Image (cartoon, rainbow, N blue to C red):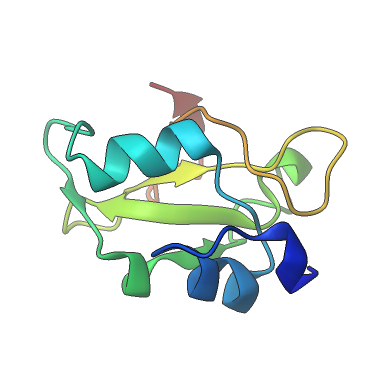
Length: 105
């Protein structure tokens, strides 16, 4: 990921670290505290992480980024756009650690 592709904002350091680009709408909603997901706690940007444990079964979840957790192993993630290696979709997905399934919320 080329640093010139990132905005100079709270997310740029994490974007470079994880090699992804967060959607502007997501960033605005996160910063303005508009994301509320029942049963989940949003992670601070510094704690966002790549999650690939479902990628063997669901290749489309490769390099998904966890942005919230519920304390029992499940997470809320953003996944990559279909034709991109670094642009994340502006859609939230719940990942269930026990079943290995995921679904859009």
